[in-house]
Amino acid sequence: MAGLIFLVIVVLLVALFIFYYNKFVSLRNQSEAAWSDIDVQLKRRYDLIPNIVETVKGYASHEKDTFEEVTRARAEAMNAQGVERQAEAENMLTGALKSLFALSENYPELKANTNFLELQRTLQETEDSIQLARRYYNAVVRDFNTLTDTFPSVIIANMFSFTKLEYFEIEDTQRENVQVKF
Image (cartoon, rainbow, N blue to C red; front, side, top):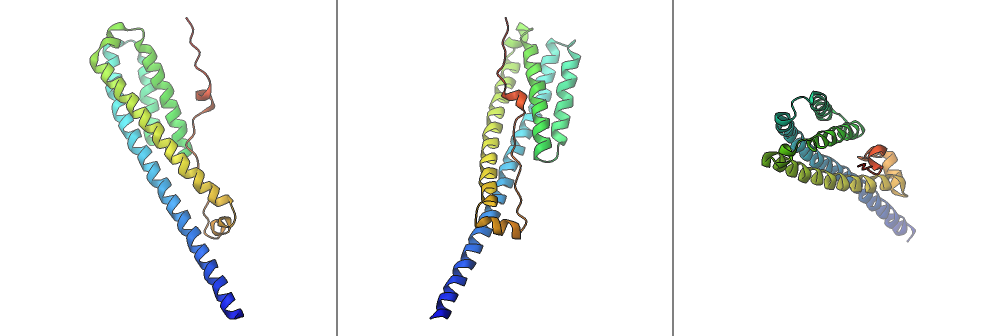
């Protein structure tokens, strides 16, 4: 009888071990797939930027500093490695794009250009897709990190070196309210 109870306990422990290990692997794979989704949207964004810059250049050729800032930020974002560095680079690129679109306010002909308006609309759709992909990625990271901290899964996490993943976060400056002055 004692042998049967011992066997049942061992089987339950093995089943629990397998369950949590598989859960870690599943969440890690989901986070990698979610990161890949972000990458796809970022690539789409990077491909749109040169077209937007060229369109704006046609109307505002003397705004060289703004164009160089956007180009530099795009290159840094494309070459960024790792979640934290990618987030920093994307935040810089977002700021540079805001400057570019603010520049368009000074050129009524540009604001009325159908090509510019279409590029702006496509970029906005892409930004929305990036935001959704970031939210999904961060949700998977949250679940993974919670699993690494809670008992009994923390035991499996430590045994197999499952470490917390990084969130894809925005900078504090982007959390501030935008000030509009007339």
